[in-house]
Image 1: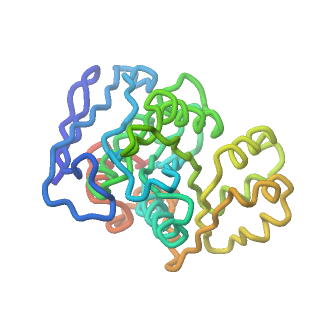
Image 2: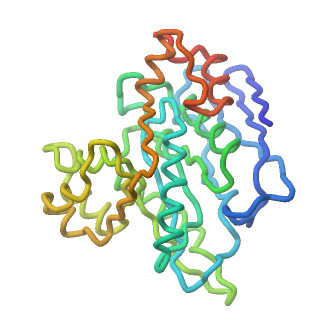
Length: 295
């Protein structure tokens, strides 16, 4: 159950939703629920940089199931304009992958990081709208995915490598890693979660700096969800930097192909066609209430 209350500009938007209690495993069914309040503040000018910032940790578990493994946090960077079920399914497919290939990592949390408005992509709704839609989607459908607005509220566009650096600073610097039963803390492994189309862009000239690719792939790693028509393995073989860091790139095959795209959703809205079952109902209601993507 979700209630959205809009306040006048200069105040806040509160999202009230049922979420799993702190420390609950993502694989367990919650026996009780707590109410979580998320706040996204905007000013009259709706500048994302005016939002107060607090790194979200309300779904980080308090312990690991297997402390011999490395705690893994997946970060998905993107426009999310709007967020769709495919964006959320990427995390679930990754969870299945690491449950099956779980010798090294234990997936403990996931984050959506909406891109900054300065990205200036066609069809990009204002950052505060995209952050709110992502919050509505995750808080009503997941027990382990969170939304970090940091990237969206910066005064300029942020490259992917500095965004991952931010997560490393928050999770391993300020928080200090994952607490263990011994009282010690183990560093989180932070990894980029992306679709197969993103990895193809790694090979496009003047799109990615080589130093950033080395930092993303070598320093952090990447979990790639293979999409229709994308041969990730062939691209890994042909791209020098990807091949160099291939052991840090994990490819997840889609067993049920899902081609939902935000671009198609926006087109459907402009054409006054149904978008039900393409994205969570609270997100659909928010789009309708805010008159988004009509032009």
